[in-house]
Amino acid sequence: MALLAALVAGVAIFLIVLGLGANLHQGTQSDIIEARLAQFNASGRVVTNLSEVELSLSFFDRVIRPPLERLANWTARVTPAARQSILEDRLILAGRPAGLNAASFFVLQMISFVVLAVVGLLLSIWLTASTYGFTLVIVGTLFFAILGYLLPTLILNIAVNRHKHELIIALPSALDLLTISVEAGLGFDAALTRVTDKYHNVLSNEFARVLSEIRLGRPRHEALSDMGMRSNVEELNTFIQAVVQSEQLGVGIANVLRIQSEEIRRRRRQRAEEAGQKAPLKMLFPMVFCIFPTLFVVLLGPAIIKVFGEFSH
Image (cartoon, rainbow, N blue to C red; front, top):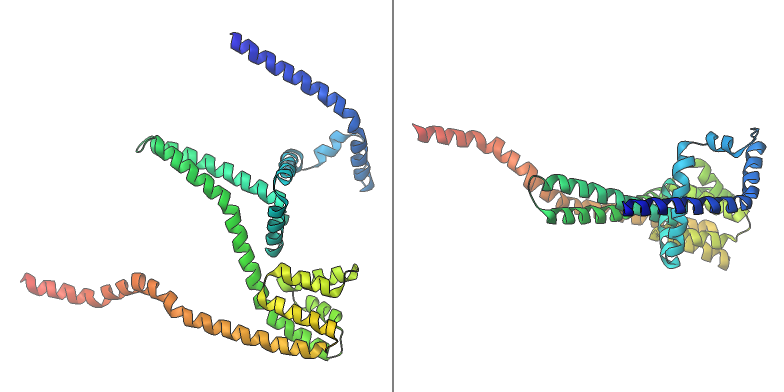
């Protein structure tokens, strides 16, 4: 009873302190509330209090998003800046899936870690009830927890590789159109605009970003160099460096584009030949373990049945 009374008293004291803190904090939040109300009124909806604003939001925005944002801010404060910068570069290279940034990705890792750890714990307890002991609970929980922590990184790596592959596939056609447009008399920026209008893929999105940065006042060579480093694709980076050097040295851009287009086509053909030479080796194991046993059954099965029939008489 004494323990229960102490627990109730502690909870009551905590609630009182929390209420006093909320009252003290209410005065500092008045400007924020007024700003949010003004924002909603400016959008064409007339609201009178904060409750109406909150109820107009979805359940995710009202209940789930605020604690996730606080957790993301906390992870951003405790995570080293170098690690955040590396992760930001990889997220940009992956095409910014689901609009994630470094902080939200760390939150996703934590959620995946906790969820799969709980799943592993429950599954291990269910299996322990019939077969093994307490060791399985520990091993299963640790395995699922590590899997939950590594799963977002694995998915991010897959997205990065897919993004780079799409850049490599789209590069030759885009270079051909760039070469034709420049030789027809268009400037390099106008040729990039022509590419973004013609194609709708990862490479055209990157070119559109470069054009936006140029319109905002960033030098062209800096925007292009940033695109090359951001993409982490050797062919694209080589093309961009050639374009930047031609601009700095005053070389005709049309000749550079033609040479780079031919070089990209040659590398694409070499890559296709390399993949074709690797195909027999990749087909060996499926043939040995899947196709050959079936062929043996079909070809030798009747002969074996006949042999057994002859020896049985």
